[in-house]
Image (cartoon, rainbow, N blue to C red; front, side, top):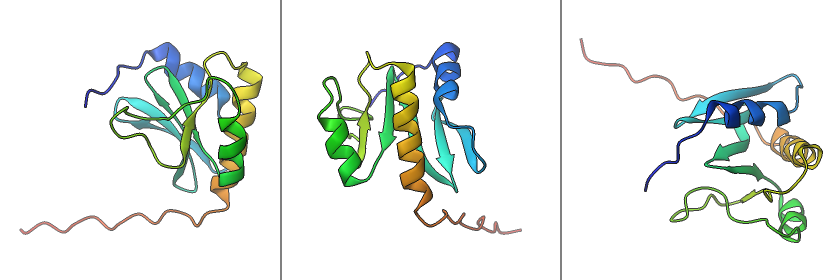
Length: 120
């Protein structure tokens, strides 16, 4: 599986769509970026695709929008995620990002695993 290259422009554009609310972070992910709330990812950039993680009702609604498709590597698309249509306006993209954030914010915060102790 080959990971796509992401331009600095695409990463900067992604950041403009992320809701600027407390608890939201944009972090690097495998040469790309992802948006997180309480440690859980709600939006991501993969190649030219912008993807969101939604509840079932949101996924069903987004599936009805022409141009929507799977998100992630073609060999292993991410479960519960869809890519936004490429011709969607930035305002509509930002709305989907916000819906994804609101859904993921209802999940329990991700607990970081403790670092492994190394033998000395």
